[in-house]
Image (cartoon, rainbow, N blue to C red; front, side, top):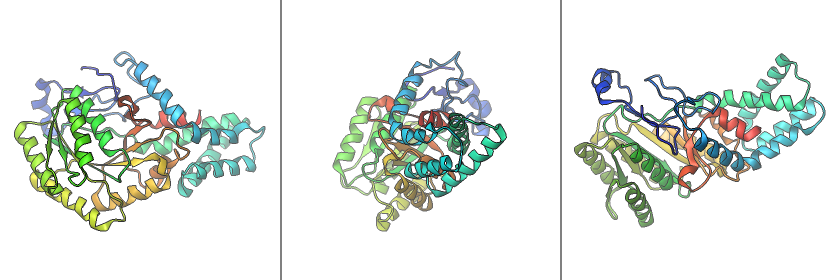
Length: 358
């Protein structure tokens, strides 16, 4: 097994000798996750305490955790202030409720966390507010756990990934970062510039394609569905491992534009049975509850398989992941805290909870 450093703790590519014997089980050939040792892969990214230390250099991950902790400081500091008092009483829980709501955890997730926390406090018989904070880390970790899932690449050849999101969420940049790391993992990637109405989108995607030295299918002013169709067929003909379709940004309230996304999805399915294999929504973590609204709307329209949550740096609304976990638990494959290549990483529930609350 080859270990690659970078955005993911490691990629695993199954040796060719194993592929014939396991193909019938649809075991992914490439899993861009931190702990994938079999078809029953462990969650996305392990914390240093539980990761395969013998195989992975933890320094890059530690640097990432420092950036995540820094990015979530605005959210975390407002919650941490709740535990500076001298006793555990109703006032503490009321302050914590306010802090969680202000962090955009949402009413349902906030109530769930409070009930769970009170149970843990009673069972552990803790008497210090700081001990309650540590129990909240455990409660938040358990709530976020369903979001922790690997993005499997390789069960189908090519694996077709459709990426959607509103303008400004960081969609094309996230595609570029993912593409570069897949290419570094010796995956042959082909990009579809299906955002045909915004020239800057095609140019931006083209820059990433050049950096990663991958192929791109583009057409100025053409039909987005037709570009996606051509890209999937080109990917099959050229032996691509992954085809990623970048689509035009649109608000979920723009119903006629959402219909265009549905059309792209249908056309991709005509180009290849079972495709797209992944439908990823990129959401801006700064938008708080609006991000949850986007998740619900895009999921109802397209059937999302995963999320990429960007721009968590400097936000006071980092609690939105708790709201997503409680109300629409779609896997969060990656989270981002900046514009640099290393600022997009695999999601770990424990790491996120610790970065937010410790």
